[in-house]
Amino acid sequence: MAIQLQGNSGVVAEVPGTSFRALSTNIKPIEYATLGHYRTSHRCVLAATQAANSRLFILRNNSTNLIVPTRLAVKLLQTAAGTAQIAGIDAYRLTGFTVLDTTNTVTPSVSVKRTSMAAAPGNAQVRGVTAAGAAAGMTGGTSTKDGTAFWQFSYPVAAAAATSNAGLFGPYDLFDDVNGTHPFVLAQNEGLLIENRALNTTSFGFEAIFEIAWAEVTAY
Image (cartoon, rainbow, N blue to C red; front, side, top):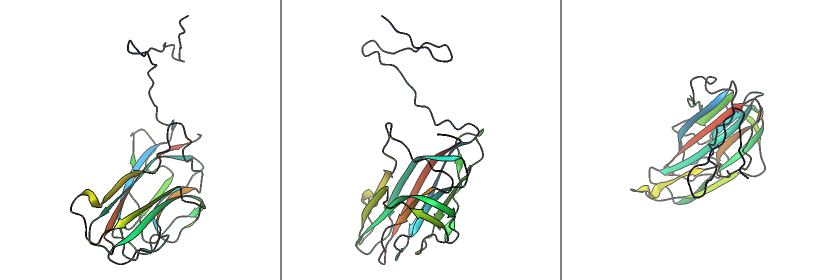
């Protein structure tokens, strides 16, 4: 017996093709109601003697609305000769994020994905370490990191900058656990952090690019 599926609009579902006859579906964006979807990026130099656990990039939810990050990508490029070493960066979820960093910070410009959405950046606060780099990273904020990073990456620093893409690492997708898994949902005073792992030695010669996108919603 044939079965027909009819949606709220009264339209009956169709299937394409003549062999597998699979139901066609479209993946829809997260419902944002009167809020919106946003995206930005930040580029910065990783300094020689970049301090251990120094903060490079953060996002904070400053509202009772919820923030659902949909993309977080990292790229690293060696642009100058360095002292041979193994370096690393890590990403953490933050709680108790009550005070935003105020020193060695810049505020990236945020794009709203549709003009009719609430103006960027919504109620998100995004900060990156100064583009020229700061050995201490961003400071002045108050937050608590989860006990373990949700993403970790180690990379080699070469004695000479590469003349090909051998010196490029990434892009790495930090939210690659898709296909039905639960995304991060950030409540008020929660956020995300990318930080330098251990003290860099001299002659470092790296820059980093961070790309992030998120939806702000009233419920999820």
